[in-house]
Image (cartoon, rainbow over all chains, first blue to last red; front, side):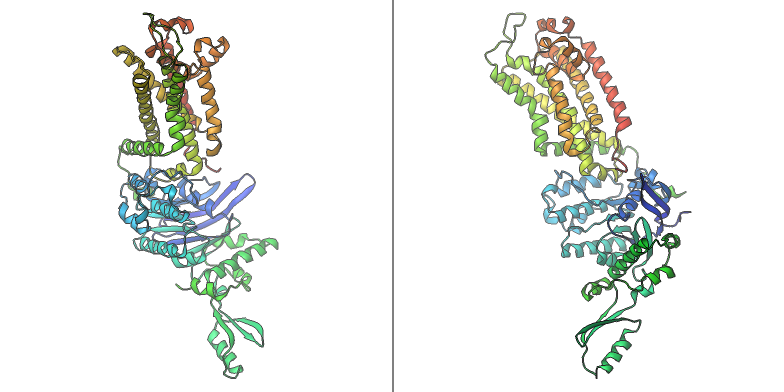
Length: 328
Length: 279
């Protein structure tokens, strides 16, 4: 049964193309006002999921409710409550930014103000430029602007910041945060894990058409996957140790070192990216070993003990990426 | 139960948004350089070439013995070709391109009614087709000294042949837009069809000089009937004798175009999809 209180509710969603199973029983809920990041490698089923929920694709089986409506049968009233930013677009773009936004605003019963939206996506200086003359990143901002012009209750963002420079990405995050604060529900897919960590309340990780984990950004992957890693150099050899009490370990190491500074000391808390890579790698290993992955998708809630065991050796990344990932 | 949370959209949006689509479509049309040339200006270019190249030739004489110039002779054919290009060729290529470049997918995700989209397309064809016919008529009249009809009856005939022709052509264009598998192949699929039709339907070559079997083939398609209707308006009365059966056969024009209009509407209803699901 789908959850009628949720903005999006999916149960046992399956999508089969001929002999290829793109989605193999995915279940999750997204609450109203929540920002949910759907993560996964290319071809894992992220876009298939999001396009089923947007009403673009039919599901093979399973249940889905988006704002209480079956997305396969959503009418214009339903579409008026959605904002959709598709993955890629290549329209001829023979209209200016302002013309396009004004035109699209007319489709919706309570659109946002065109000037405000142009301002919010940082295209004030380009508003009278033909869309085809914009750079890739600027065109992407037009896509985002078109996604929010209708003042949606639910916003789908499929890899929204591809092609953005770091500054534009930060501006975009700011925009999404302000949408969040207004109560917009957001379903985001992205390959930038720092983006998911910065914006998401919760994340789901999808691989091979299955949801391999779901949880809050701080908890996904389970406690074991988040055990800090202490690295130091001892006699020219790189050493590392995972521990729940890194301060104690560092104090002990300093003591052993006669109170002198430790060479190359790092305390790394696994970022979402580390956890993600660990989960996906563990999933792929389990596939090779013929492990029955079904057990893990059935719960759909916090990760079970099996997952934690598999995460005993998550991939680790240098401290620079980790620092940003856990900044929130 | 759940749909109660979703407010209903106000009624009557389809027409208002259709009007907004027409503005957007016409603007986009004239900013697209190749569509302006290959569908809008092409008949004008051809009329100019024929009128200039054959300026010393007579294409027959009217009842009072006056020569019929190349411009007078080719004007009805070019008007008919304009209907085919502005409607069928333009929309078939345009919509196939919009399907493959993501325009339709984006629109399908908005509360824009499909009806409004069609109003926009057909409105675009009406606006650009009317502008095209006006420019053709003015050029023929002012530049090449063609005598335009002076009776209300002739202009009435022109009016309905134009409207029925352009609408049928537009609807067939929408139906045909399903044929090309991608936007890139659209012109390669559509232009040969319209080009062959123009050659066998009495646009570039005098219809009466075509072999009978080719005339019979052309009889099956709408362009021949549009050209015949236009000839009845712009050629002298005594040219009627050269038509098949020695008649303008306006009843045949109505029947043939109306039949194609119905075929086009049915094909649109059956085949038109906002996007190809699961492709």
